[in-house]
Image (tube, rainbow, N blue to C red; front, side, top):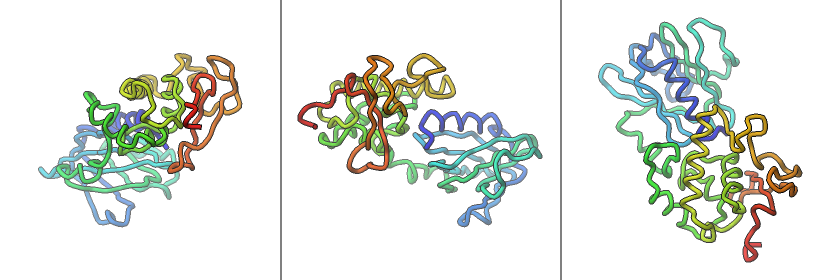
Length: 266
């Protein structure tokens, strides 16, 4: 699933292709929106909150938001008008066409159209977006520490705690902070610094177009997907396992030497 940085980059691509332009045709291949026509609407831009995309329109003075989520398979692609699509037409869920460009959402997991004033109805439950300017540190810390016994990795992946972190940034920020991802959040030293690190890493990902945690674009990650390979810092074999009891389908990675698990958590 794309993480917060990749979703922010998707929003930027949509803005380059659509922002400020008038739609000359739309096609919603989604049952609840099959009869919707936004022809004539002006695209105001696309914002994000964590992994959620919010494309906003002015349609005859009515402000509307298209809420989409990529989940595992979704993609937004922007093509020149009339150009061949880069992915199969059978997977298209939304088509937004201007005179010069065509944005197509493929295999989207969520497609909703709502008044812009009602955006909180679809994102209000989420935690602070770590990529947002001036994100609420106090609220993020409160949500993180609400259940002190919860494994750190499980809490960081919970988008109602903080929005934008996926398994890549979970693994990498825990390594950078020197904390095992299964450490109970109540035992994490300086958890606010950890959250700030995560936000900084996400911003680096946006700036580089992909996660680059080590500073080396050829070998950009410290531990993610390096199971059974040597730690880049100390050469200890990297281990992998489930994030926590409530997220056993998600995998995280750690160096047992650089990130020892507290004894009472074993």
